[in-house]
Image 1 (cartoon, rainbow, N blue to C red):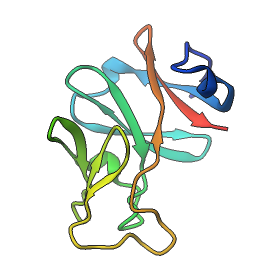
Image 2 (cartoon, rainbow, N blue to C red):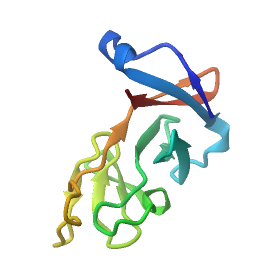
Image 3 (cartoon, rainbow, N blue to C red):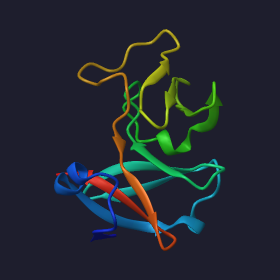
Length: 132
């Protein structure tokens, strides 16, 4: 991985995000997760059927395991989702919001929702932004 400065989505974002080139979009299977490591932080990448790539934290806040990229991709009301592979909480991939806690609480000190990361595909390369 290397830091990159692709075009950005907003001016405000450009000043506070370090972009990392992580892989080619063709390296990602559609509706399957993949893990990447950004300066010691694990993220889960998901390529959707429309070739958008979304990134969320890899750590499952309900189990504490780094497994979100192994979750099941789906949709709820047109919203792309991933179901955690451990206890099946459902998260909105675009916002990270937990849509279904399945009656569980996150681990102490963990937020119920997933952290999201900005993504961009430039010349076929997936870049993930890491807030600085």
